[in-house]
Image 1 (cartoon, one colour):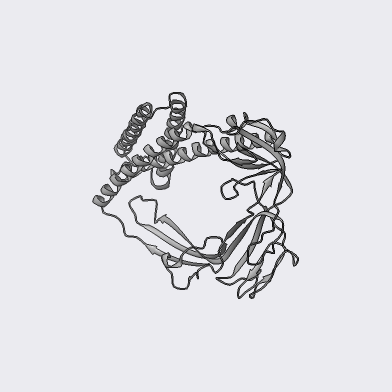
Image 2: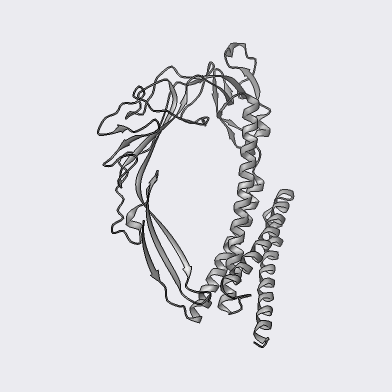
Amino acid sequence: MSKHREMKRRKARSEKIVGGTACFVMGLAMFSGSLYMIYWNESRKDVSVVAKTSVVIDAGNPAANRVENEKLVSATGQLTSGKTIGDGLYLKPDNYIATQRVVEMYAWKQVKREKKNSSDESSGKKTTYSYSKKWMREPDMSDRFKYAEGHHNPPKAIDDAETRAEDAKVGAYSFDMAVVELPSYKKLTLTNENTTIKGGAALADSDYIFKGEGSLSSPEIGDLRIGYKIIESGRMATIMGKLDNDRVTSYDAGEYGKIFRIFDGTKESAVGALHKEFLLRLWGFRAGALALMWMGISLMIGPLTVSMNIMPADGAKGRVVIGFAAFIISLVLSAAAIIVSGGVHSLTALIPVLAGGIALVLLTFALFKIASSKRKATPA
C-alpha cells in the first residue's frame, strides 16, 4: 500500500461563512430529498398481495386447465431446456437454463481520507490518498486517481457476460427468456470436464480460472480471475405471470407493477419471497432516508455554528454534540414523515414536517448560540 498526503491551508473567516451558507443550502436540499424519498417509499405496494390471488394451473398439462387467457396464473413444475448453452469462452455447453461469467481484475484502488489538523474547527485539513491492490469486478479508472503515476490500471481484458437458453419451459409452459426475471444463480464448481482452458488461462482451483502474468495466490496488476454462476436445468420452480394459451407472459398489476418471474419452489414460497423482498426494501429505504436526513440536518447545523464561532464544545466534542442533536431531530422527523405519508399520502401533507424540521434546526442553532455566549461570559 502507498500513501500520499496533502495539507490544506487554514480558511479565512469570510470563506468559512460562504462555505457554511453553501453547506446549509446543500443540507436543506438533502433534507427535502429525504422527505420525498420517504413519501415515494411509503407509496409502494406489496406485490405479494396480488401474487397470492394468482390462479394455480397444472404445469404439466395445459389442455386440462380451464382458466381464461389474460388471467394471473402460477404454474409449478420442472424448469427445463432442450438445448445446451455455454459462454463461448471457457465454459463448455451443458444443459443450463442460464449462465453468468463473473470476471474480476487485480487492480489499484484509491481511498481518500480527510482529517482535521487539530481540535480547532477553523484549522485546515490533512488529506490522505492511499492505494491498495484488490480483486475488483469493476476496476477504478486510474486516470481519475489523484496520483496516477505508479498506480496504472489497464482495461479489463475479458468482460462479464450472461447467456440464457432460448427455449426454456416450466413444465409445458414456455415464456420469453429475454424478459422474465429468473431465480437466483448458484456458483458453479469448475472442473476439467466442464471447462475448456485455452489462450494462456489456467484452471486455478474449483472456483476460478486464472489468466495473467502472476498466479491466483500472487497476482499482478491486470491479472484476471474468472468464475461462473449457473441456473441448472431440472430444478423445481414456479412461474408467475399472464396466461396466454401454452405460454406465460408479463402481467400488468396496475399500481402493484408487473409480474413476470420464476421462483424456486412452490407458489407459497414465491409469495413469501415477494413479501420478504418488499419488507427489506421498505425498511432499507426508510433507513436510507433517515441517513440522508441526518446528513442534511448536520450540514445545516454544523457549518453555521463553525462560521459563527458558536461551537457547543471544542473540536471533536462539538462535532459529536452536533451529530447527536441532528440524529435525534432526524429520528423524530422521519418517523413523523412515515406516519403522514402512510396515512394521508400527499406531498402537501409533508409541508408541516419540512417546516418543523427547519424550525428545529433554527432552534438547535439558537440553543448552541446561547450556550456559547454563556461559556464565553464565564470567567476562566
